[in-house]
Length: 495
Image (cartoon, rainbow, N blue to C red; front, top):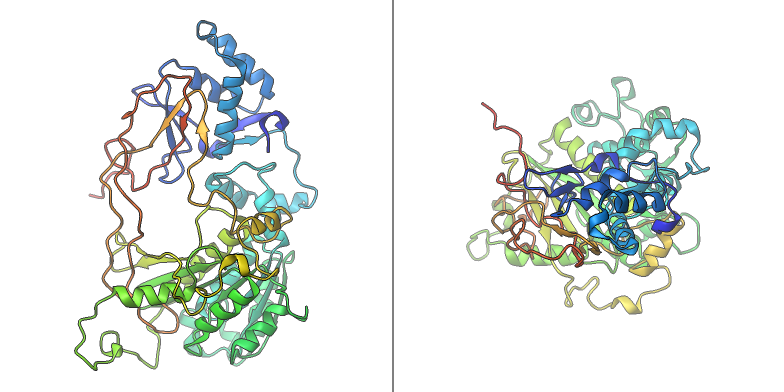
């Protein structure tokens, strides 16, 4: 989306700017990872964001800034560049863009609140704020497992407007399922889960195409066949979601098959009070096996020689779980699918994150570089992948016609320089990554892997630490760590 093509540029309502006591302009809200602060000693940046209220064309916005600050003699191209860079950073939308014909008025009403959330989290330019919803409408998702995690994920995806969801589940509904598998009712006991799930999901959203099959995955060939969907080899789905915990090696199978087909995928589960999701895309960061190997090397369970790991985290014939932990893991899985399908938020795949309900302030995060020695992906360089693999720029092109956007450019990269004004970090604060929770990682199949802090998070710059001339270009940067109470407002501590 180019600025000259915009009919009426407008700062997104969720990104509405305000002026700080020291004259800086804060835009993008106070949510960490979204907001930025712009030094504005001459006041024209504030005039610019006020003028971009959706009532003026681009030329009129430039003219208004020039009219309000005649003493600065601002060149028109400088003002236009500032608009361009704020747009590239994701803070500006086109208020004059027509809604896409692909979405009916009924669908726009139904998904309107979801559109505004995606708009808030979206840090890239769009021709229409409805573009992510259109991508979701066109998406094809394969879900393995419709129990506690999978049922919650299916419910959230269908409610969010996924176009096609195919579910795979072998079991029947039992009374002991009902404390956590909220897709089912007492009247469903004894019914195949897939039948009960399809009935509930179709009743939730008649616009979504929900299909399913009652079968068990017994090897990689079964997953290959499900992904192909009768297409003769190439994946028929944009994303694979794994919410099954049997057999224990199923995650390895999913990793193998998705690497071969180039299909982005995610897996989620719980282990006691720990819930997490892993997000992967072939050719984009570590694969599941890379992550597993690196975590096995990192952790130290202090076991004696010959001791089995099970003594550190006992295996039981039941899963300690309730509707909260199962629901959280399923919602995280649906969130991962939205990231892979819509590219929002723009987080590079190849990681696992989650929550420790015993220590809510101690998040779980695992990320590791792709391993050259990985037996799954290390011997297959990206440039040697087949035509079916959607990686890098190929994923970007696929995203343009509605398919998966996991490889969109700019993942983990700061926005381009903001011409004519300096943008600085929204908040200073001490550097450092979140500490490890020290407990086992939650996975549906009962394996154990402690969480690891995210690498590459270092000290953050102080607001206003660099002074530049107003016509110099500088970067719109977002904070690399949690906001500091000295700069960004925080909610009061509970009494």
